[in-house]
Amino acid sequence: MEVSAGVGESTGLASGLTFELSIPFPSSSFAWIALGSLAPDPEPRKGGISKELTVTDDILHVKWRADEARILRVSISSFLEHLSLVVETMDLFGAPAV
Image (cartoon, rainbow, N blue to C red; front, top):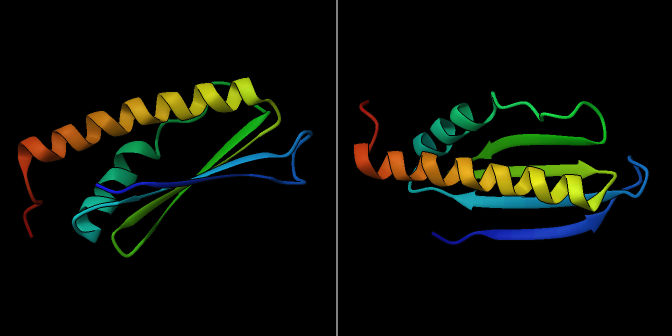
């Protein structure tokens, strides 16, 4: 699996930190399953960070915006742990039934 990421600045929050991650899946079905599994997890802290998940074809896109690097790091780390579990589960159960 090939993953791409980018870091940048945004004017929306105090220090304007952003991080974007694109995760390709074998099919759009897998990408949508990952979105459904990961989207319900709200950020534990209200304010200071936001996370947006979208799917384009077979790619899951995630974009974070934060006002502190520490909060951004914790959110990304937690997301990657959950993503790892979702991918392991997909590997165990295989392709979704049509």
